[in-house]
View 1 (spheres, one colour):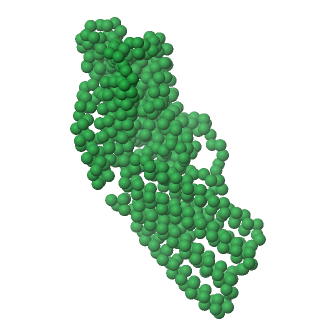
View 2: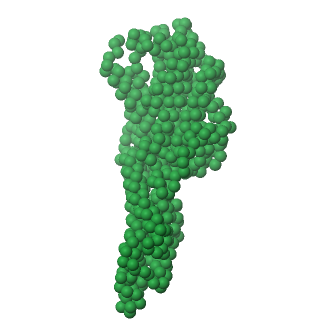
View 3: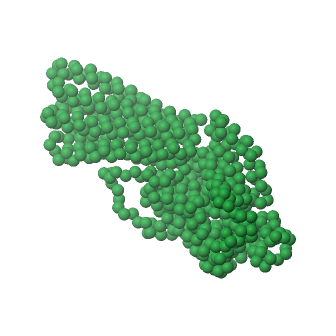
Length: 596
């Protein structure tokens, strides 16, 4: 049998189908439980034990330690958990990822799931056309599950047979009999393969097939899986590149945890692998080291080897069980040892990556979102919500500065400095709107549920209204600048009325910020308050407009002073409108689905 280029391309296609199946299955589950994942990660990290349990459960659910650690990085970036809490979740995620290896090993040889894939597709595909998003996401999960095992089956089919094509894979056999050197070589192969595939599950599947085909021994298979444990850290590292310092520290902590654990096992590799083999024999009845010895000595054991020298179905199942047991024992031991040093981990990571300088309000920077690689689209929404609140709080300070400017005299150094600050804040506001909008657009391009898309649309509206508030604050400053250029001074009764109006506006602003803090479930009382405050502002503006005409006609103050007075009152009324628009954006895009 000759191994052709067509067979090789088919093998690549099978690997791609496997990886795509993992991606679709993971994203389908994340969309089914996107909000629940946010709530679980936000609540179940009170201490190290609950954090570890959370990491295990979340990773077992979404079948990807890379996805769960990216999730954790984004949560630290968004300020939803501390570095210490994140480390506990990451420790658990490394154990949770072994669930995937058990699924693959359990179904790879004992039961051919690919035989039933068409039947599952017959169930999953129609679900994509259902109206309810829950069923659509569940259909995606089933389709991904089918693709995963169809790909695994095709990989096994198109992988070249070493016995029939010895020359093609001769480079592998050259490195299998170098003792501890072979362990190191295959350890680094595991790192590289996992970094390229960005999936330790894919590496495990490939290793499982290589061992079942007899290309490599059980010990070298364990070395590849151990290397994959380090390679899988590349995804959260990439995700943290655009994040803040806390996000980078979280990714670094994940790298340290996996690297230190892997190095310790490498040092005691032979006794550790022997221990796992003994555990496997005790639980399953067959020692994987015996299978390896049978292959090397060509022992005629009909239970392990076929007449042609290949592994029997029983031997393949035993090898799959043993390979799944290795990362389970390794990660469990790593967790039980490292969990007691969580605080030390945090200190080491902070020492490796110290804070360079403290940012001030005068610097343009986004705290919770960045331009780099996105994590899970549903979970990026939380980061955007946090950033929008920071944006609104910055604009609130801008409103305070604008009001302070009203009371300062012209040609005053404090006036000039404050005007410059307001101008700089307005520029920062414009840039923040663009950056947040770009981030939300990138999130919307991901695989979002209908509810998630509704949230993104609502947040795009909210940031536009917040930017309008910043523009109005700057318009107040420009109005005061024009007033000072013509040397107009407000009388004391006019200043009193202006202060009353801006008291109402600042009260409405505080209520708006409170609603943004409760964005996913705003209280009805706060929303009713927002409508009442906007109505009060409108009524007060109408009264002042009528009084202004009366005062000008009766020479209480001159016409020019009255014009500037009403300009400031008009901007205040616009501020009230923009704030209510923000509240309505939250009400319509978030409150309705929270009730649903």
